[in-house]
Image 1 (cartoon, helix red, strand yellow):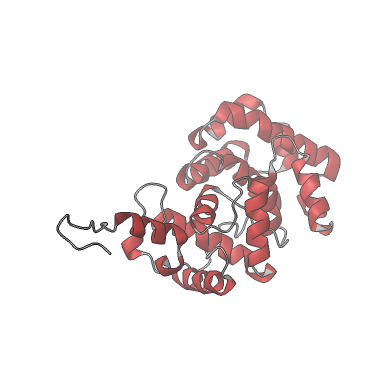
Image 2: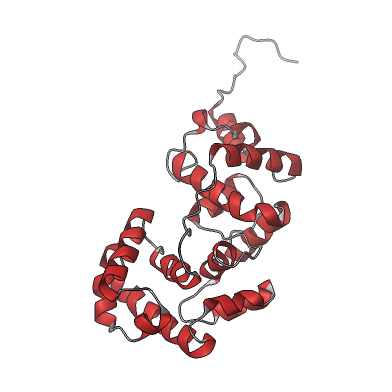
Length: 237
C-alpha cells in the first residue's frame, strides 16, 4: 500500500462503510472539545467521558472563566476518573486562564485564522501539543487537519504510509493521501478500526476486511509460510 494510492482509497472507503462517523463532539463547545482532548491523554474513552461529566457536575459549566476561577484541587477531584488528575488539572486551569486572557474566552476566534497559524496559536497554550491542536481544529473548527492518535500511528506504520515514525511525518503523509473533505471521517474510521480489529496486540487479521492491501498482514503471512527444504536424495541442478 505504501506506493499504491488506489489501494489506500479503496481501503478507506471500505473502513468508512464499516465504521459510520460517530461525532463525539456533538453538542460540545470548542472549549469543551479542547478540555476533553486534554482529558483523553493516556486514558480510555470511557474514563475521559466520566472525567468530563464529573468535572461538569463539580464546576457547573465547562467554560474558560469558570475553570480559571476554580481551584486546582477542585479540578483534580472533578477529573479524577480520567487519570493523571494532578498532572492534567494545572494544565486545564492554565489553558482556561490563557483562553480567557488572550482570546476573551472564545476558542472560536482562532478558527478564523489560516490552518497553520491557528495550529501555532493553539500549540502556544500550556500543555497543548500537535495532536490536541489538530483534534480541536478538525473536530471543532472545520479545518482540514488529520489528527494522529496511537491507533492511527500504529496502522500507518503497518500500512507503510511513511518510513518516519514521528507525529508530523505521519500527519503529513495522511494529509497527502486523503482528500481534505474526508479527513475527519477517515480519522474516525481508522481509530474505530484500530480499536476493534487492528489492535496493538493480537490483531484480528482473519476478520479484517482490508487485509489484502495491508503490508503488515502480507509480511506476517510470508513469515508463517513453511520453507520447503531440498531433501538429501533429491537431484541437484
